[in-house]
Image 1 (cartoon, rainbow, N blue to C red):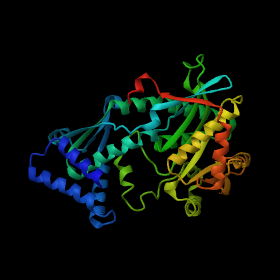
Image 2: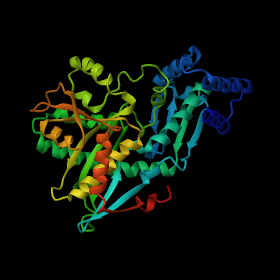
Image 3: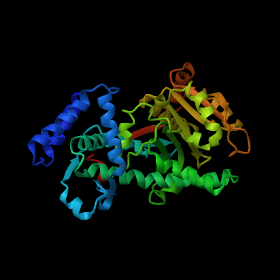
Image 4: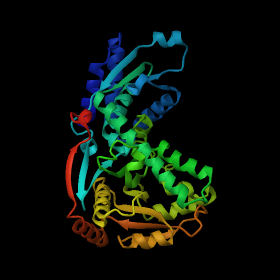
Length: 394
């Protein structure tokens, strides 16, 4: 609550004042009233509805170089020229990016590796603050246009993440083409669209750090990768006030899906979801997917350290359940980590039956598995360093 009051006060103070001071005071009052109203009160929901309608009609445009964006009303140029254009630069805070600007350098069996998390969920704290500035604008100044400028730290981090994120995706898709020739063009389009529609994921990637390969294509240096997707469609790369409102509006997540759900035929999806979410609370469940290995000679202690890092990330995100899709062979593999079968997955994409398997993060099996991985990985020498010279000051 205090954070919201400070944020709105800062927003009002740092943006150009409206000529009519009485009108400005009324707008500030409406923001404060929104903050103080109970989330399920008619007044609060009325503001949410009004803001939601406004968002639908605003035009979003990136500024050249994606240094920020504008939100403008869809009127004629002359009408828009007459509207005040408010501008805010959202500066990054010390804790916005955390370990996102670090990578680990590993040494094992005479080889060197580098580990990064190139998921766009790393941008979430900064994106949330951008969304709140925009929401404050829409409540206080709904008739004005808005320009939001990112700071240089956010821009550099986003560029760096994307430089690894898509080459990693391409490497996984190549392996799918080889291992799953029965997938058609539409299947691969869905796999790509899932990553473009939502950035609510961590993508843990291990690369070869051999100096002779360091300057080669990133997709050719990928050794291991796994994606951890969280419930709720989000766009941290392109900030959206819709994301913020989803936490304010009842039943707003009803159309959100975990990645595996897109593979269920539409006519069977509702029944499966009812059974699934009666056991797994949506906001505390993640899906592990796209676990791919590109080097059969990788030492086992390196693989164990990689999985330890991935499972620890789930713990850090305060998730309670991990689910994954698995064919019979993969299900047996996952069983060694404590996963159990929940249900058969109603999909025809695989030649063999596929199952949804799960693991409770608070279970004795999970804790036992983490201790085993920790013990197996203890001989991997790891050091943490800044991503590169350009990122050190973030």
